[in-house]
Figure 1 (cartoon, rainbow, N blue to C red):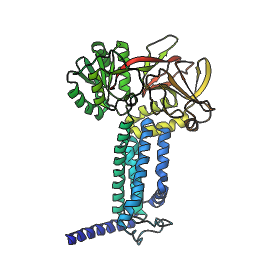
Figure 2: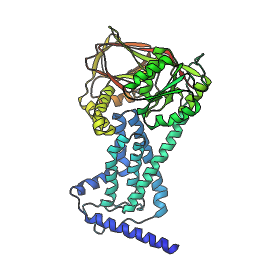
Figure 3: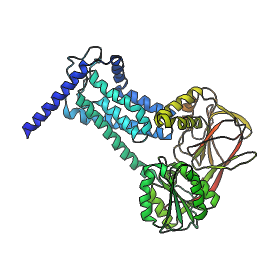
Length: 492
């Protein structure tokens, strides 16, 4: 057995050296200038820190979450590989015979060779992104692979060092995802919403009609098995796309309780149908983003099934925007409403994503907004204002500046209004506003809470966004909070 192990180790070492020498002999045009610099940029995680910052500033809420996951994965990989990893094997660095001098590092690393810390950091950051935002990971992955290859190209690592480091990084990303999911489950805490007396208890689901958005992905499909088992008499209507709105209206008109399985956009449409029909709503989280469900205290399908069976529900507030002065059909938001930079970014991303993918589309959209966006000039409560962003939350969001996090009470009955005022460039103004207090007035940021707000003189073609949906704003509208407007099931 010992002889076989020595033979196996010798074969791996020979393969390692042969591949290392082959890379040293091979010349790639332009690589001598690019790859060594790329490797140096990744020293101490600087390259990935800059990438995480850019994604967090210019990306969506999901992109910001992915950037945090990537940074946490990198931190875990770096901490473990430079302690347990490096000192458990103690492999010497490769001899530089045959590596052209132009490629070599000015100062050779002093740590042991196995595994590659640069590769671990690169793939940990990419894995953290991929598990939350595959589009952004697709943008970063070629850079990560190039950093890993540069370690062999510049002569500081054997190929097996790089492969082991990459595997270590991916493992770190998986560990962080598991820890993050546990933390998310722990933070799903019911708020102080007022209990809704009289919500019907449906122990077997009889009287419940659940509209399932089949376009929401695997999360919705996984929840259906639990729903069928716990509420076997519930009616399930599966649809997607343009049919969804009609299916929700039809289900709300005939059901005792309207159920919905999907993400925030689908839940928004279901809430509007439930409000018009005057029926309670049962939310089964099944989308990529489930901000409303998490803020309400629903961790998954099991929670909603238990609440429906027990007949336990709460009253929540709903935000409404109504075109004026001629009127028109109102729109509703359960999470937030915005005018300005974010709707512009969302519109560009939705237009480009089908052609180039979500991650690249978000990056190009952020660049377009920073370069070409102009502040929106409108009238707020009768006063002229120039704003980069108008954000109105359905209930008070925790956290500073214009960036929403989570809410502790969906029954508060107030709009959380935040303005990033015009002047300068949008990027610096957004960053400056992010450091302002949650209820502050500064040269760049205004935050307050109110019941209603009139918005007038909105320029033609100005976009608005609500719960992740995109539309064109009317010339004038009224934002208002409807306290206790919707009854939603939630376990005790």
